[in-house]
Length: 119
Image (tube, rainbow, N blue to C red):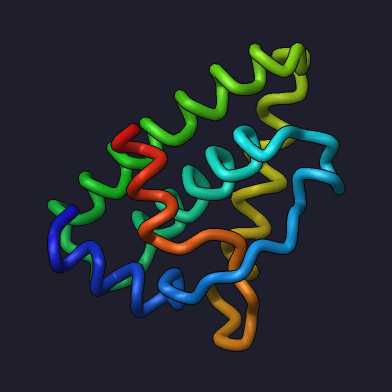
C-alpha cells in the first residue's frame, strides 16, 4: 500500500478503529463482515476527489481482493449467491456513511483491511 493511499484512507477517517459487529445484523460471519466492509471501504477510496489514478487503481485492486475473500466466505457460510449483491450494496452504503462522517465509529482499521487482503 502506497503512502498516498494511506493518506487517502486517513483523510476519510479509515484509521479510526471500532468494531460494532454488523455481522449479527446481517447474519453473516465475522469473516464475511470484515471482507465486505474492507472491500466497500476500498471502493469508497476509489471515488474520493483528488485521489490519483495510481492510488485509485491500487484501492480498486484491494477492493477486488477483499470482495474475493468475501465471496469465498459467503460460500463457506452457505449464503446464497443471490444475497451477494444485496450485501455488497449494504456494505458500500455503510462504508460511505461511516467514511463521510468524522464522528462515526468505523468497524475496521486500514491495518485490519490490509492484513485481510495480504492473508
